[in-house]
Image 1 (cartoon, rainbow, N blue to C red):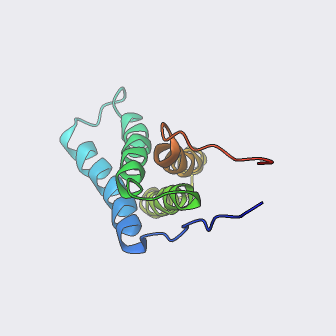
Image 2: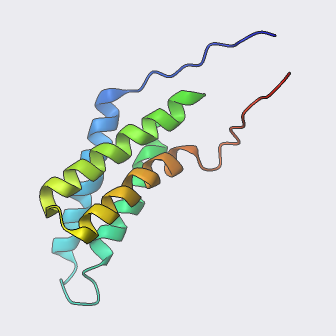
Length: 119
């Protein structure tokens, strides 16, 4: 049995830029859209979707464990910036958790990454 080395290096600068960018694009969209009662939750959900897209973009040239780790970094940075901007309310913490999950899911989804067992 041989073990192939997993490339797990994370592009830190790109991941930081993507995470911060996802939150600030969300904030810009909130100012462009009228802040009514019906559109207010859209800001948090838009940040989750933008984080998933940013994680997918940053991790496009990664393989192996580096894909999920890159998505995790993008999601964590985006969630951290979101918590700094919006505070530590219950809904903000829930959306931060969803943002971290969206970062990993956005990076990994549709890639066909599978675990190899017992070959």
